[in-house]
Image 1 (tube, rainbow, N blue to C red):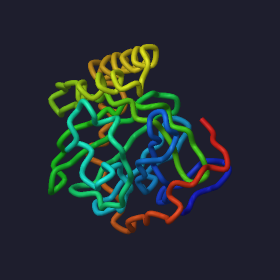
Image 2 (image 1 turned 90 degrees about the vertical axis):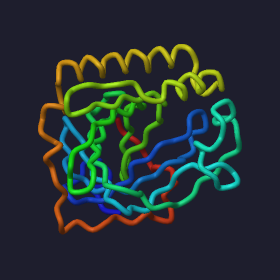
Image 3 (image 1 turned 135 degrees about the horizontal axis):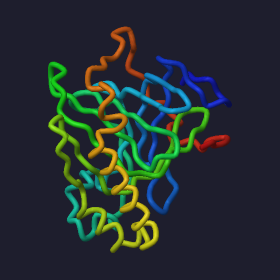
Length: 221
């Protein structure tokens, strides 16, 4: 794993981990090795290449989380598994302190499909990457500037399951409304041309380290 260590600043081409911790558990249950595209005080941009080996949550018997009925999806026993990212790669954009990141998706042949606003805890930086906590509610944004809410049913179920209290849920809703304001104003990053970005063909796919779930020595906002 490359990077600049304690300063938490990375150069283009560095490999870091983009991780999510389980709500209420603190244990890493999603880990995606990515390549740094840009790292400035205003923006962290990373690329997850097709075929990247990642860690994802699954039910205790190894089946997909989404195969579990919604009523018990967040209370059924879980574990994690290693799996390759299927389909096209994903460009992720995150601004310090913002409670969301914006992901760009393409179809085959680099035909741009959509942006995806992933509502989440502002990312904590550490020497090996960034950690966050997913907030269930998301927004899809399309090239014609239309948008729609995603996973509202999971957001509601997370509250019923005790993974998110009323105060946190309201903070997430407020963040979502702020994100919608940004979309409607076609502010950053939607109007910045990132859909025309392409990865450096010399970049290799980063490897998933054996200690992907290690505890950071320190964190920084």
